[in-house]
Image (cartoon, rainbow, N blue to C red; front, side, top):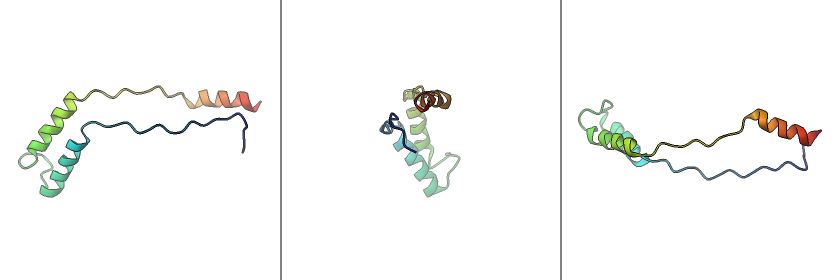
Length: 79
């Protein structure tokens, strides 16, 4: 199906996620030691992850138009 006036925007770059290194080290510690409850060997990794999550800014969500909005716009071009 070809629609002459339809334009598609390219995808935006992915957002940088905070605390990924701390989370990865926590998972690696759990995998290496089996200390899933973070009581002994993984306590330091858990503490670092917790402080990072407390200090990281809250992610803001961009408004995404609903599918009905897009269908209404598309309907105008098809009629």
